[in-house]
Amino acid sequence: MNRGWFVTGTDTGIGKSLASATLLHALRARGLRAVGMKPLASGCERTPDGWRNEDALALQAASAPRPAYEDVNPFALPNPLAPELAAADAGIRVTLAPIEAAFARLCSQADAVVVEGVGGWAAPLAADLDQADLVRALGLPVVMVVGLRLGCLNHARLTARAIEADGLHLAGWIANDIDPAMARADDNFTLLKQRLPVACWGRLPFHEMPDPARLKSLLEPPDRR
Image 1 (cartoon, rainbow, N blue to C red):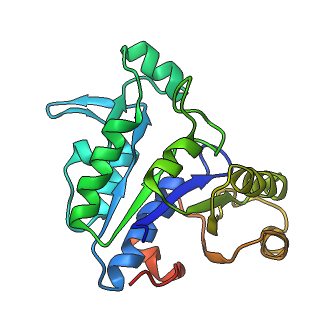
Image 2: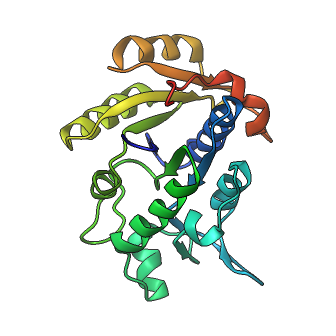
């Protein structure tokens, strides 16, 4: 039995981290031990404890029990670039083994692990490593975050097809209102529900400073007990 989900998105900057952190709080509200993971993060800041990424820290903060940062984010890359470029700049080769080991440690302390990917589904992790390879290695179903903005119908349907074409299981999707000025956002949301092949787990409203803990009741993931 798998131990969580892999969270991908229709693009970069559409709220994967917010959706992942909110999902963690929703699972915890059910009495589950739930921890987050961001296997690879580019755009990190140097701290006294080492390189740290804002999104990975948010996942760590939303987790209970609180995991070690090195397990949450095995590959912390300084430059805010595509992972392959950021890794090359840092002189690092991204491989599956450290991620699989960290994932196993997280699984040993939690009922569910929410793993956040990078960018959109087709964004590569390395020259010889796609996100689909990572999802297969971890044995996880996929949750797709759809940023509600112009073009979301196309991006969401293409992403869903790509996930299925890669032979992986799309378990559900989460809508995120990232553009408060989007025309007819509710109608677009309805069209997405009609056309995507899996159920919507919820819709997150736009907020300048969203609080995942307060949004948890808006998501309804399937029961994993």
